[in-house]
Amino acid sequence: MCYRRETQRIPVTAPQSRHRIHAIESEANPLFKDLKKLLGGRGIKKQGKALVCGARLVADVMDRHPAQCLAWITSGERQPPPENAPAQMDWLQLAPPLFQALDPFGTRSPILQYQVPDLPIWDPAMPLAEGCSLLIPFQDPENVGAVIRSAAAFGVDRIVLLAESANPFHPKAIRASAGTVFSVNLLSGPALEHLPEDLPVLALAASGKPLEAIAFPETFCLLAGMEGPGLPTRWQAHAVAIPMAEGVESLNAAVATAVALYEWRRSKGAD
Image 1 (cartoon, one colour):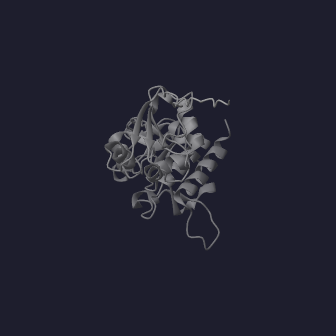
Image 2: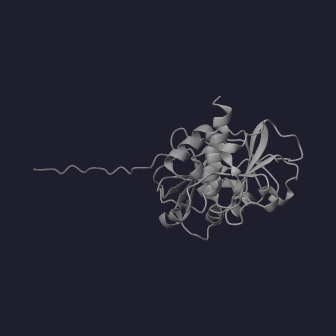
Image 3: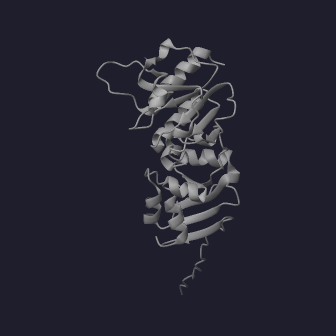
């Protein structure tokens, strides 16, 4: 006589997460609505939070600034927070279509929600510290991120975001900065029109004197014009220009600033 051995099915339970989990299935969910607002500068400013996208950037920010990491955002319950993830982080498990809406670069990797620091106020009436203070009026977040990366590369100690500037923690700015936005000295400044007349500004404009013909002051502010409107008239009288081949209209604002910063760094010698 044959006997069939009965096998008992033991349910497999997913490992318990040490992070508080929020499963979000609807775009009407208040948490998702707030997350979606972080794709724009206004939402970042209002909430004091930002989204960091891309596996390398997320890992680097979490390693360097764990206390500012608020939430780990994934498509469904896949890709749980890594072992070194701060315990205070929430785990937001979004339905795949909702996650795609928060993934502007199509990385498909987990997104980090980050607590944005309050930027110190820069007072142009106070004496300037020695060296270059970079003034940023750019309205394109990619230009803001790119010029912050260049400033970090060439040793600029003070980066002043003027009132016209796009938010430096916009996802596009973070990506263009390659994460340097989290480690440089950022300050919040006034609008272009409120800069003092006697501020030692070295401005960039196509009508200025050639860049290689000037001597950089020991203390100065570097200012490039905004995309489109260009440089305010009052700064054009003492502007410098980057020589270019004929037939080329102009350089991108962030690229022009990077060239000027390189020339400044070269002129003072590598430290």
